[in-house]
Length: 127
Image (tube, rainbow, N blue to C red; front, side, top):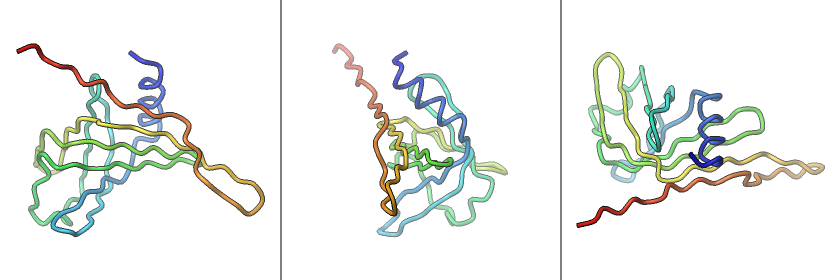
């Protein structure tokens, strides 16, 4: 496994919680989630309070996941490929891009500096 992917995966696991965001008919929806990792480029987002969805389905939707810890920021772009609703909502997400940013300061100026970017390689199937 590539070291960039391993490092970003370690950061995601260390932070564990995040904000899942997506758009639905022009409306921006944010949902707090707990994150667990699966094999490869897959992760699970678990939400216990998902009343804000009002029955909206997330299957096959593009989402973003934002995590913050001290001066570390993780941004993950992905697509929901499985959705399970019970007492909690579990979304399985295929990661299409993951970035790690660090907040930098100089005097009164603050900015985010890109530390690492991971974009999974697409596997082409022979026909």
